[in-house]
Amino acid sequence: MPDVTVVGGGPAGTLSARLLASSGRDVTLIEDHHVSGTPVHCAGVVSGEVIENMGVKPEVEGIISAAEVVLPDSTSIFTRRRSPYAYVIDRSDFDVKLADAAEAAGVTMKYGIRYKNHQVTESGVTINTNSGSITSDLLVGADGQSSLVAASLGNNAARSYIRGAQADVEYRMDDQECMRLWLGRDVAPGFFAWMLPLGDKTRIGLGVGLEYGPPIEYLNRLLDKTGLAERRRLATYVGKIPIGGRRVSYADRTLLIGDAAGQVKPVSGGGLYPISKAAPLLNETINRAYSMNMFTSSTLALYERSWKREIGKSINGGMRLRKYFDMLTDEELCQIGHLYAREDISELLSEIDVDDPSNVVRPILRCKGVKSTLLKIYLRHLL
Ligand SMILES: Cc1cc2nc3c(=O)[nH]c(=O)nc-3n(C[C@H](O)[C@H](O)[C@H](O)COP(=O)(O)OP(=O)(O)OC[C@H]3O[C@@H](n4cnc5c(N)ncnc54)[C@H](O)[C@@H]3O)c2cc1C
Image (tube, rainbow, N blue to C red):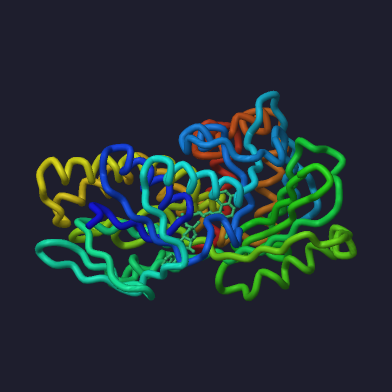
């Protein structure tokens, strides 16, 4: 009987499983697909810190050290710096390498096995799958945005969802270091759109709030607008991003991680950084539970306290920022955007940390005229 059964062979599952196996646990991972990393639902944008934390070297398809943000009135704000903001990785290759590393650490990987439900008893947790049952001490739900393990904890949907769609097209962007981002209700209501330079191909995509209909329609419009609709399409991806967290990430003998736990940055939709922070904390909590031989929710609650201490503030702050931006009209978005074109603010903006954009929020708020403009707009919506 394994100590821990992990459900899901994405980055949250494979990283957690690897850390647990390296701590001496007997770990079995089940994944419903026949390989990790396919299909892809990700733009692949990560910081250097994420790559370092995850401990495998993915194929890097692009290095981003500049950004052009296009406002609804077509004004562009540019920011550039010497060191990279982010890397665009081959997400499929990344997931495969993480799965290989888990297996090399001793994890038993079982592909083509689908979690159905589980029962917790005093002596263990029994996981029922499409191919028999597995009993272990603990269950880790890393089964992504539509997590059945998360749902089994009751009233545990993510606070909100963004729906995304993107395409890789045969086209070479002129500036191979600069990503282009669009804001505005016409292009990507409730989120933003992106265009990433990846050599002879370009990744173009967007997210939209659930209430705005299918993202693929917005993507087709963006492809038309950019003149890329006629280019050869190499791949199309769609997916859902859970944002704002879930009610709970632990229960008796059960822990959640990654999209299954709603651990996603609400402003960018990035899920890989939170996973890289949460997995070591999950490992620590499980090691502690073994040292006490106690697997109840009160012992496992430590995990949620620790990951919230690490990334909870930026998730909550990001949600507040999202709420503010969601209420803006395109005109107001431009009014704020034009402030960012000012030299003093764009200089601060160039120091943005993609993992924690709040690092520039306070300094920008201190710049002349920023707080009063934001407040004026906010009050207009209240009255
Ligand atoms: C359009 C889009 C763009 C994105 N871009 C970025 C980005 O640029 N940077 C970034 O950091 N994040 C990005 N994200 C978010 C990121 O992809 C996710 O946060 C990340 O994949 C979460 O990893 P995970 O392991 O929790 O879940 P997943 O990667 O979804 O893995 C879950 C795994 O569980 C398996 N599974 C599900 N149900 C079961 C079951 N019942 N039984 C067995 N196995 C099961 C699935 O097959 C899957 O392999 C993007 C998301 C979308 C949709």
